[in-house]
Image (cartoon, rainbow over all chains, first blue to last red; front, side, top):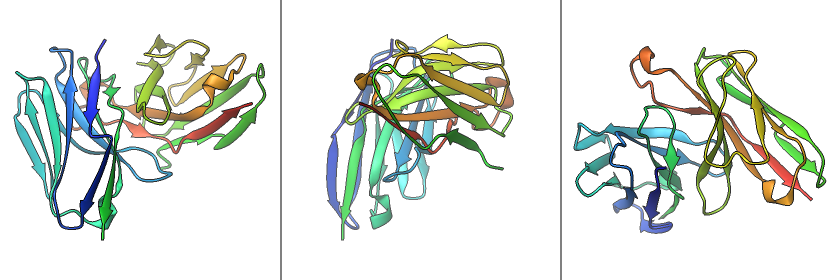
Length: 111
Length: 117
């Protein structure tokens, strides 16, 4: 099955700085890569996703890049704000519905 | 729309007891999922369903059973609870591939915190 590794497990950044989270996947057939954000005590929510036919996707302050050859994808958050503090999960799918999640990254934005 | 709801929110069981977690969605989604979330391990898929009357095993199915008798409901059962099943359980649902748009987005319920003593 698919194995998704996520790094780092924790990330502390100064407000206004950028944050980068990296994930690798094992199944070359995976073609869908979403990112979920989970605030403390809340449910995970999709923040951005990318398909394997696209190398980069951006939505305001967040962007995701995908390198199919190397089998890794990254989440970039620019101009971080206190409300960006949360746990972020990457995931991969090779069948368009079941997701294999990474272990998560706890992001703390310092004021 | 309530989205995805789960009952109960919290539960404490003794080893060997049984219980059923209920997930309901009002978005007419075909696909439904049960995950468990443990510290440092992300979300792991227990069982899933691609439609009413169908279920399939996920990554960590042992010790759990599921049923999907109605499209809007997905039940997760623990027949004989063990301390290793202490976790936060999330239900999720999504459209089938044919729906178009962001059809892969999984919508999560608020979670059930289960403790097995």
